[in-house]
Image (tube, rainbow, N blue to C red; front, side, top):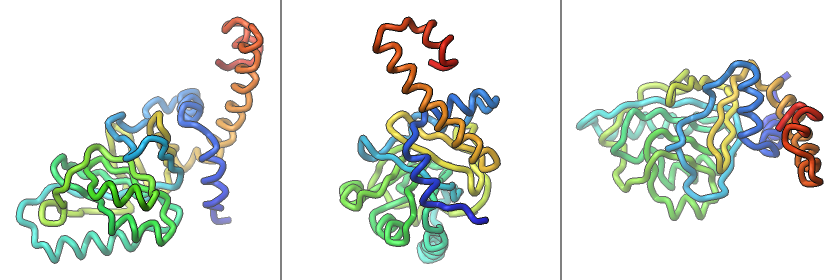
Length: 219
C-alpha cells in the first residue's frame, strides 16, 4: 500500500526533533542530525516529508544553457510532498531561488534542505515555503555549478540521506529518519511525547527529576 504522504506529514509535523533523536538514539542511530549550520530562512519554519536527494559540485565556466537545462529538469522531477535535500559540495553560489521555489510550491513539494546557498530570500519568504540552508548569496549557481545526480544517496555532515528517508526540521535542527525505520520511529516518538507530557505535569506539581524518571521511564 503506498504511503499516505499527507497523514505522515501531519503526524511527524506534530512531533519535535528532540523526541525523534531520542528514539533514534535508543535504536543505536546516534548520527541522524544534520549540521547545525543548516538554518531556516525564517525562525519558526518547519518541514516534514520524504527526502529527494540531489548532488552537485562546482564547475568553472560550465555552459550556461547546458547547466540550467539540467537543473530545471531536476526541479521538475521532484514529487509532491517530498523535500529536496541538496549536497552541493560548494560554498560560493546560490543553489535555490525564488522562481524555483514558486514552481516547487505550486506542485506541492514540502520544502528544501540545502547544504549550500539560497538567494531571493525576501521573495521566498513571501511564498511561505520552508527552506533550510547553510548560507545566502546573490551569486547564481547556474554558470558555476554542475548538477551530477539526483534521487540518489548523499551524505551531509556524516549523515547518509537516501531517497525516501524521512526529513523533519524545526527550530532545533534537522533529523533524518531512515525509511526502513520510519513507521516504528514515528510510533515510538508519539508515545514518547505523550509520556513527556505526563513527566511535565508531574514535575510542575513538584516531583523531583529522578522521581519522575523512575515513574515514567523518560525525562
